[in-house]
Length: 468
Image 1 (cartoon, rainbow, N blue to C red):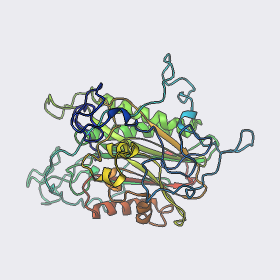
Image 2: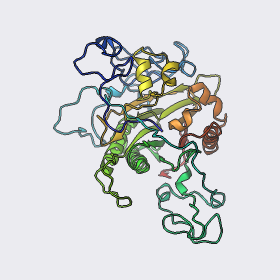
Image 3: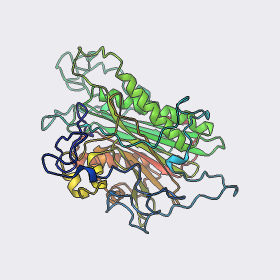
Image 4: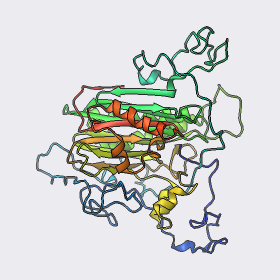
């Protein structure tokens, strides 16, 4: 998945990546003038939101600096998001907001941090984390699970706690022990988390271990509910565990569940979806932080273990609004049903490559070809430099679908146009089938990482309240 360092990286030259001291004016290795490097931009989604732009914000329909050219709408040709109606018009749909427009309060109207002055706009985290330690060219693949074709998917919360099969799927004779291995032939049994599929009303998701990793470190949470006025709301949370961290699979599961629970509780109370999204990401971070203090009884003491960590991306469709929130490099895409209209990427990566492009130091092609491209600059975990949740709210003027995914998918369909060409045309009415198609696309492309994708139709269709 995303890359992250084992320890906090020192400040480095943005030109040659050599370490520099905080008070250096020039790089000692290449002579680069460190005083003229612009700071990485704050949260600028690919699609700008309606309403008065903040100072320095591109005009509506203009891609933010450093966003992908092929998949992003050109200036003046973006998706037409209708402007919010003026106060007092009696519109039932909430206006579109900038992230800074919302008060720093929780669902009960109380300050998020009582007794503390309101924090200034968060700056991008200064740390960088790397992943992908040396690994074999191929991991041995486990035997297929013959139960998968005949069983109805279990509820999400039972995915990790299913009891092992009593008979080995390989030799059909040996008993399977509590560790998941056959006592007769020693064959490792398939784990249910290796491939998960869920539906919750009109939203669906699929997660797969991929073809190279020995376990699935991704996780997701889905839900559908109703707002106080009875209109439907759906959400999807996708988390990608950081492989170089300790227990990344636990981190992604804890974060997804915590965020999903907050969204499922806040939306029916009438909390604005963007405020609920912020609360959900904060809760997810707290859940991952809590894992760092828990002893791991299943493994021997390891003095070199680090804090569990993961990335997060989430989307909510409610009351004519499309709200996304994220930390890290997992992404959300907008694909309209009318494929003649432009698709778009809704998130900006917290990554080294994105910072290089935004600073004007490298082209996008150069940055993403660099071996440091997937180094992440934002993540959830006790060793994160600071929590900087990004949220953005959109109001599409036409039906479509939102694709929420980890880099295990977008590595094989990076631009919005590529994503639109890959997802089936009937994605809005067959979201589970579409999620399977996207996962299959990643596996056909090489499956080098865990792959997780959720598909949310817009607008949300009435399906009743509940969650998967």
